[in-house]
Length: 267
Image (cartoon, rainbow, N blue to C red):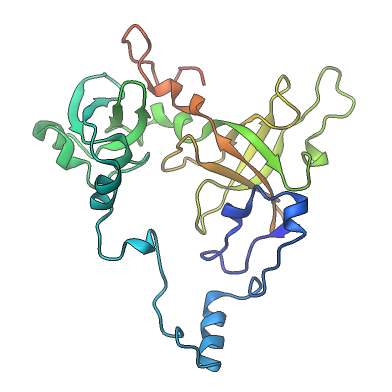
């Protein structure tokens, strides 16, 4: 079994969620039962040379290099339009899709047309890789985006035990293999946990695809991120799935150039 660490900030289960039983059986976490403050106390007790070293955060290897400068040095630029998610209007120009993350608000103003900046705050809500377009909205907190911030499709689901939890299996219901399951979830690394419901796909491979509905809106669901599943009543990490690119379908332009409504477009 893989359990969350007692220190919610330093817990690493988000990155370990895809381990198999064979891999997990070979792993030991000698300080996994300690909080970071306790580890630092021990470092002082043993007079270790790194006992006063500050905690690293984010992309710690960058040092004083700014994130945009680092990305530009390795990936360069590839300018494209920024479009309003609701109207499809071009409201600015980005320097490359990789400079922006879903849910981002800070730093957007510098790539928007001046008149559009005054109509903010603007949030990045999706990225259209085929058209090299960043999609933004100044209505991200409105009801129209509730579904886009709480519902998504998960694929490539893996379970640490090797198969889905028994409570997800439907017994006695003709034509149904699965029933809804409640879990605590992590959408990104960090201490924030959210509750939600997983519904495995009846027509998909055995327990490896399904839809998720979070109890509360997330700040930015991005395809490619892991959604990690935990027991509601204890610390056990059960497995994870990858947020599907189907999640962005409701926010991208159709082939006719029309903008789909975030509130009613299918996933």
